Amino acid sequence: QVQLVESGGGLVQAGGSLRLTCVASGSAFSSAAMRWYRQPPGKQREWVALISNGGSTSYADAVKGRFTISRDNAKNTVYLEMNSLKPEDTAVYYCNWSFQRTYWGQGTQVTVSS
Image (cartoon, rainbow, N blue to C red; front, side, top):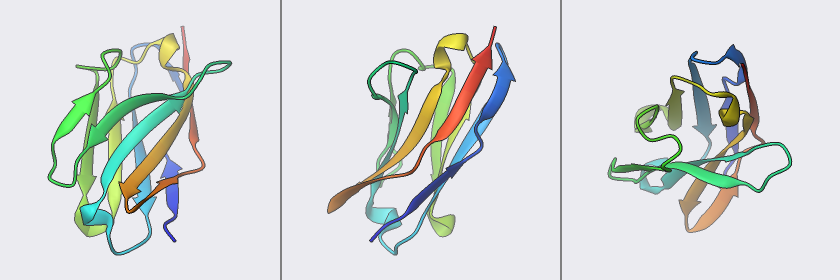
């Protein structure tokens, strides 16, 4: 069983920055592809960013150039650095693990005020 714990969310003004952290339990972290998703209020969950087990990254168009996903396998941790935040980035952000099975964290709230 894998557990994912997100942190780092909060309230920030438009144009500001936040760094989200997701710590995973389990010994297979280095083999897992890790993703960040978000769910804006009243909307469906959407994919934000991916980092493969080899370190390749990809991003949704809405965040490309503003968000950076990274990982530290020694710490079983994946990060999402979010810059130039916009009110439309307001959402609950979820960490996702994909290897053998799929696991989700409990989410962390990000609120961007205008």
